[in-house]
View (cartoon, rainbow, N blue to C red):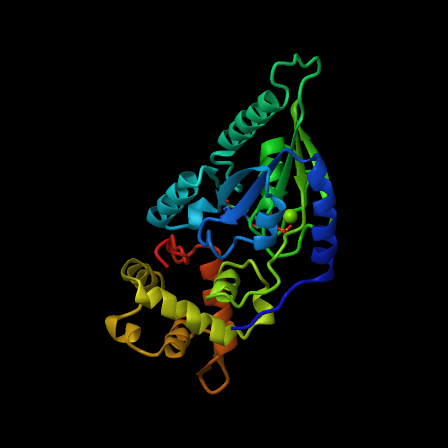
Length: 288
Ligand SMILES: Nc1nc2c(ncn2[C@@H]2O[C@H](COP(=O)(O)OP(=O)(O)OP(=O)(O)O)[C@@H](O)[C@H]2O)c(=O)[nH]1
Ligand SMILES: [Mg+2]
């Protein structure tokens, strides 16, 4: 699947973030806990070079807990602090704020070694990540305000915005930045299934069939899938697009003549997938 998606506002945002980096002490990279590899952006990595980085694995509530704990260890082994969050419910948000303060204090101690600082330091934090990972939701939860716009579609934040938290933390919300070339592995497919790129720009029937294939291949996900749509063992050995059709029939997506409306069926399946309603599913495993 070849996707080239790099809207104008992202180009502008990337430029302005590069300028803001001079003011920044800490870079918080927000990843989707279901796809910690595919939701990484190499532009961000390059921007964060030389800065202290914290990785947030957000939407933890929808991810496969076994895979997430492996990913947590992977980042920690590289010396990066990791916080698992559910920005929607607020789980672990205070832990993230504590981590920011710990890392910030460490930076200031190093910077002002042997000098007494008269003023209280302010930690300036850049919140970055690909579209729709939950950056603005996270900021609203940390600041206990609804200053940042949120929405369940990529591309909600189009302008950067500073948000003050307490006395000594300032967060910079930024528009989602997507690596403009997505040909590596199945990153585009995974980003579409988790809703980080607009599903409408893809062929929905092809996308849902790919999603079904992923679920069938994995022993645990296969069971979740079967349970969710009350599928039989016979259903599960059929071709992926036929399984989508079965789901459509069960959901009553019919057009005249009793045929299944495949587009509607695909949309229902993809919406369930994106919103974690099939179960806790991760698409990036650490081994691959
Ligand atoms: N289940 C779940 N949903 C979340 C979580 N965090 C955010 N969301 C939802 O994800 C959607 C996107 O959230 P935003 O905060 O707008 O995402 P963003 O990263 O700011 O997106 P852009 O501004 O488009 O780059 C919203 O519908 C949120 O409610 C989470 O931890 N779990
Ligand atoms: Mg946003």
